[in-house]
Length: 215
Image (cartoon, rainbow, N blue to C red; front, side, top):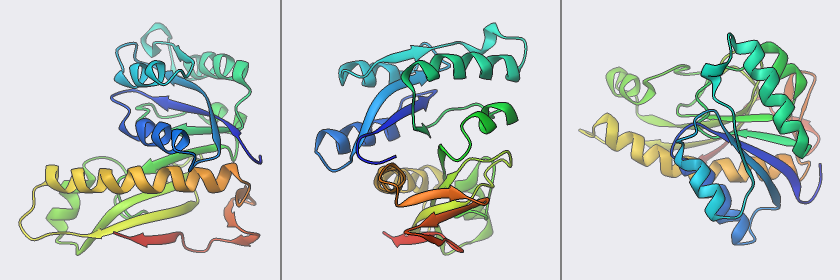
C-alpha cells in the first residue's frame, strides 16, 4: 500500500468516526488519501461531512435492489472507479455478502464497540453492564465472512464506572474509537499491518492477540 493509501470510507449515519479520519488527515497525522465516502443512505450526515471536507461522495440505496448480493455488486462497481486500496467501515449498517468480502479480501476494516471476541453483535454496552464487567472498549479488525470475527488488530479499553448508564458508557467508548480507528488504519495504509494466511500481521509477525491501548 504505502504512503497516501487510497481509502474509501463507508457510512450509513452521522459519520463521527469518519470525522475523526478527516481531522487526522487534515492535521497531517494520518497518511491516507480519503478518495471517496460512500453511503447506502442518501440522508446520512456522513455525506455532508465528506462534502464539507472536499471528499467525493457516492450513494446507492440498498432498498432499490432485490437482495444483498446484487446491492453489493453495485457498490463494488461504484467503489472500484476510485481504485481503493483500503475500505473502512465507519458505521456502515449492512452485513456484507461473501462475494463483496472476497472482492476486497484483506482490505476491509471494521470497528466493533466491544473487546472482541466478547460481545459480537448488538447492544454491547448494556450487555457489558449487565454482566458486571470491569473493562469495556472497542476493537479494530479485518473483515471476513464471519460477522465480527475477523483478525483483530487494535483494541482500546477503559474501565467501566460504577453506576454509569449504557448511553454514558457508549459515549466514552466512542471517544476511544475516534482515537484507535485512524491509528489502526494508518498502520494498514503504511504496510505495517497486513492480512495474510487468515491472520493479521504487524511488522512481519502474526498478531496472536491485538495490540491493546488503555484509556
